[in-house]
Length: 96
Image 1 (cartoon, rainbow, N blue to C red):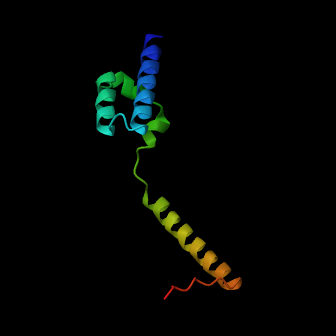
Image 2 (image 1 turned 45 degrees about the vertical axis):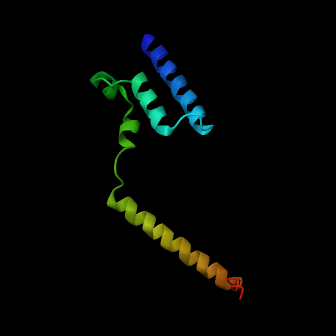
């Protein structure tokens, strides 16, 4: 329960800092320093207690996902060009 209380207090402090940064009363660097003071360092047990999804979100994208994303952009571009041609969409002329 004490760990949960400490985490809640740290989250409340982080939220307060985000509000202060948003209003321009605190710089992002100062907010980072304050957050580092609230959470000096994560112990090995805390790092292993993180959910698996949180650890996997830091992974780099693999080649298959990169290729799939590129192909999706190409297909969307081709569909957009075909629709523009079908409906006679023209680019506006530059003013002279």
